[in-house]
Image (cartoon, rainbow, N blue to C red):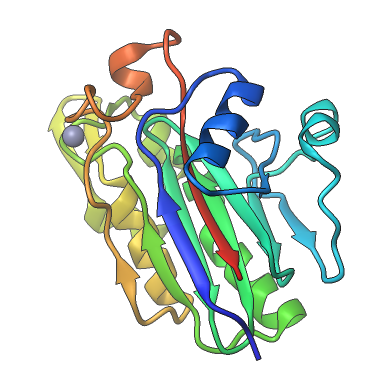
Length: 221
Ligand SMILES: [Zn+2]
């Protein structure tokens, strides 16, 4: 049996990791485990009993990956984004939660579906729910052919040609479709677009590299 699930989508947080962990701590979220994200499809497992190593040790050697699954109570797992799609997943009955980071590369690799397969096969999840956090909307995410070219067939309904060689791509829509295809019944869509709300959220498209990050986190108490 699992405990109570807590979910949180942050607004703007600092660029510096240590300052970011302290900001999360002051919001009541400690400890928070995050990854060295690399736009891939590596899923990190933190199996019970897992002991958080402390902020210094985590900053010194964050595991590489773009999704993290845990059944350890008393720990938050989170992903960092600034336009990319943060996805929180949970099965309260099984006591398992996950946070996944899906930019367009991770979306094309179906990191959402891969995370769900691991929650089911390795952690006994049966009834998974999902919530997508603040990320770039279809209107704001304009791309060349490189993005549509690598997308799976499930994405086709979410890609619109706007001029020769130019497209808009609905990343949260594609991820919601991939989640439903993986059998997730309840998918909550993003509360807001990062690029449409640059005063509230950091947006890679709007702020370029002069920016911090949002953190989307989930934990079992
Ligand atoms: Zn937008």
